[in-house]
Amino acid sequence: MVMSLKWTIAIYVSWLLLHYGAAHAYTYFCVPLTWKGLLISPFIVPTFHCTSLRWMVYTGGNKMISMWLLGGAYILGKVNNKNIEYEGRPC
Image (cartoon, rainbow, N blue to C red):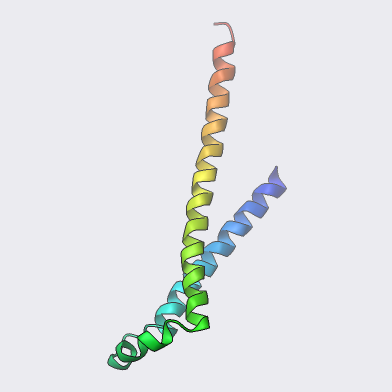
């Protein structure tokens, strides 16, 4: 149980760092905040590195949402299981 929790946290933190780093790298490399960046962004955005960074941002966000939903379902299942055990006992 403890080992799987450590792995789950490690995977979540990895996706979090990838998402955070990719979001900042995308704005720096693919859509710079200058007039030159505005003019050349249509030519830079379709490149491989920008496509990869955009995939990391999109997929990282979806993975974090999925992990929160999975964690919430797990906790809800534990709480519901405790309620069932409590209701089964005589008063």
